[in-house]
Image 1 (cartoon, rainbow, N blue to C red):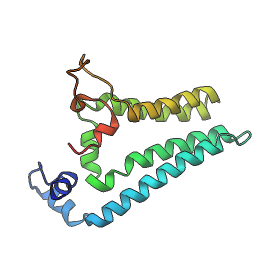
Image 2: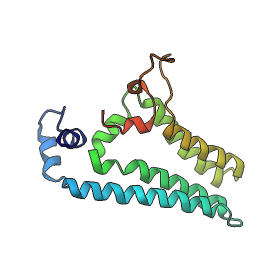
Image 3: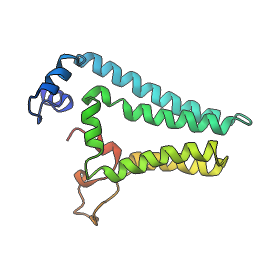
Image 4: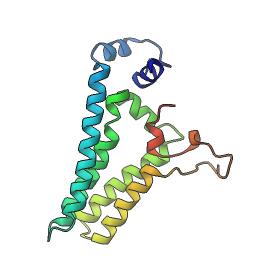
Length: 165
């Protein structure tokens, strides 16, 4: 458990510097981090479910669905900020092995909202919401790596971007 705390708090591999001392001095306790993670993740799930139910509201349903579903996914992803901190999470998201997946997810978020608000295309918004889910959960090979030799470390997906290894 101590190893998990060290990895999530960034103490495992980082050197001590002035910035890390400031961050450590202003950081949350482990219990508060867990509570924040659970609360943010639960809010994300509730927003996604609420968005799904609001899809069937006449006239404004598509707009509400796109906003709540996308915000729910962002909140669910953002919940890991409580575990490892915002800077470390951003660094991990934009590592070369995770860059494609991060761009895919962010692009799906933007295209979902564009299809709802500017293009007024319900079918396209649903497709982009499905792509959001796929991009968040399915590992994709990168750099020509495929087949049995492909490892989870080489996966290009945000879920792996927030993993503990």
